[in-house]
Image 1 (cartoon, helix red, strand yellow):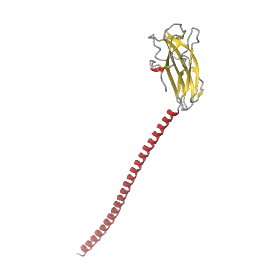
Image 2 (cartoon, one colour; image 1 turned 30 degrees about the vertical axis):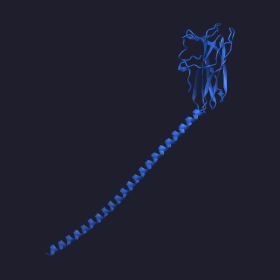
Image 3 (cartoon, rainbow, N blue to C red; image 1 turned 45 degrees about the vertical axis):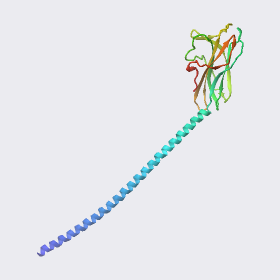
Image 4 (cartoon, rainbow, N blue to C red; image 1 turned 180 degrees about the horizontal axis):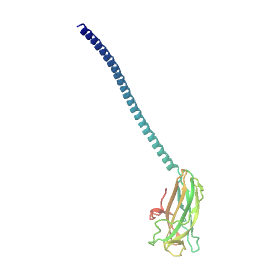
Length: 238
């Protein structure tokens, strides 16, 4: 009995020791659980903060894109309003009487109607005399002939430079010199030309135009005005 009582006492001591150890472990686990919970809250807070930062970044990118788009629009608007614009014009000789020995040439010019200088590349114009009653059409694609090279000459805003070109006619599929006949037929002068240039923004540009003037009773009857019947390729600006 004494032995059994001693064993019982020893067992009870062991049970108490194990209970204390379990209690200690439980305390550790509880503290670890608390730490894990705090870490989870911290991670959650960090995740929320990262979400906020991500949203702020997205909004910043969107704002920057809007600013870039606005700047691009402003740059394009400035390019359109401040660039050089060149046109081809034809000098009116309204009322000029024409005789067999008349010098059959006309004056044409290129003019900068824009706000900045242009660097000139090349230009050319033709004066094609046709029978106003004829159904023969000029080529759909304009044939300007050999260009006048302008060697990067600069043309300031509102300045112009002029050239002369002889009269021609379209016959049998080609342009040939025109000889004015002394008769009363109604003739039309088709003036068409172009100019290539570089604007202040480095863009290569081209302007084309096609005007018409009438000849009747051996006299130039009117000035030049846009030719509504010209093919589209004769009137183009870039």
